[in-house]
Length: 147
Image (tube, rainbow, N blue to C red; front, side, top):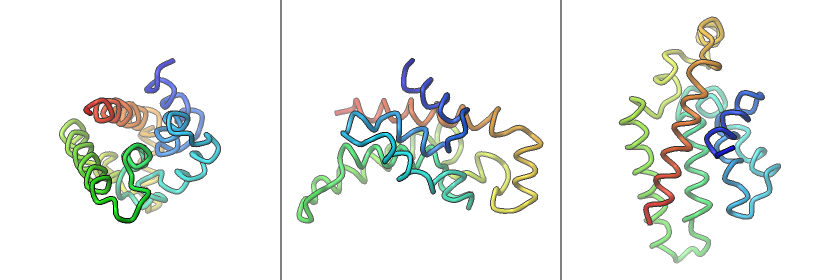
């Protein structure tokens, strides 16, 4: 099973989009899968169902940070590189999907009862979200190989 398939499978099991994306890359960066699931746990649904940045996108941003994030306060190069890759990811993902915002991608606001009902009634978590997770992993793999 490749990373895209694994991430979609995790999402379909009930993990959030952010958990699915981060956890499939965790071992590459010596991050325990359980820790990855916990760290990413609040980012699903556009960060706690706020409908903001898609959880698949924030999961990808966390992976970029694991690879390029600075660990020394004076390392401005790592900081700039990380921010650059985050911007690149956001631009590519948005070009392919139309946005990086959950409520724009889903066409509803999960932070409202009406929005959540709309998402459930239209089966968005089964029909749309798995593709968003898959696209995030695909774009992330492209970005990580660009070096």
